[in-house]
Length: 171
Image (cartoon, rainbow, N blue to C red; front, side):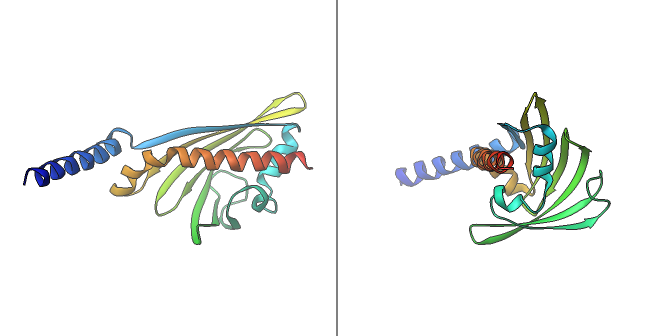
């Protein structure tokens, strides 16, 4: 009887920690950086080239324009990915677009909403690409899960940007 009571108390404690973590950290923020040995105009153009996205963006399948003028704030696109055998459809809305300097957008699907700001910083003949991401879970359960996903999301983002570097430098 004592062991069942201890188990129940331990389980309640762990569940409470899980829930508390979701309330304390309703969003996560992470940053990815990569420096490429190409000028900002080539780096930026390669980044936004839909024909090259499958070369560097893990699981990318297709991009479809939904509304607005491409590359302008307010325009919406549907991006389709395949991850672990599942199709993931996200809606991207462009927030800010400054040619060769900035691409800011939101990505939203049924699980989460991501605000991404990608800056292209010229450094002579090189360009530093800095991606800052803020992720919020949608729904109570997913909101609690997001803090536990940070390291995996950051790792995936860094892998994508490392592949982007290779694609940019191959041009």
